[in-house]
Amino acid sequence: MDGRQFLTVARFAAQESDEEWQRTAGGRAYYAMFLEARAALVRWGFANIPSYQAHAYVRSRFANALPPDLKRIGNALEYLYNVRARADYEIAQTFFTAYVVERAIDDAADMIDLLDAIDADPVRRATAIAAIRAIP
Image 1 (tube, rainbow, N blue to C red):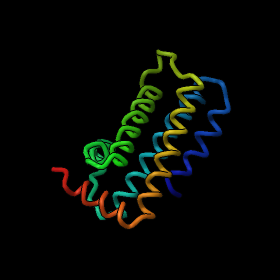
Image 2 (image 1 turned 120 degrees about the vertical axis):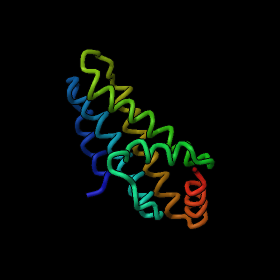
Image 3 (image 1 turned 30 degrees about the vertical axis):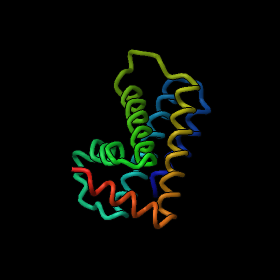
Image 4 (image 1 turned 45 degrees about the horizontal axis):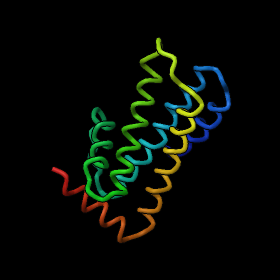
């Protein structure tokens, strides 16, 4: 299974109007994006991702890289991480709307497509790898 398969679950859950399904949709959108970003890092030679820090590590690799495409991925990961955290931990607050859920799913799908485009272009992939390696 790959991370993008969680988008199917997110889309299914988003069709339901009950809050628990909306929260599930937001969380699955994050995990789709996170798992695909982590898999890209592994494909690109960053194999020693510490499991106890995986979420912060993956977000920081993309957010702190200089190329705009990587920053876009990093920003989307940060947004989706916050959606997932709110969905899972801030249960006393009702804030999930169809817009929040749709944006989360759309952002995850768009950024997975961007990762695919970077992977498909040897120059973009080499640039991405070099930029991530340059992060202290």
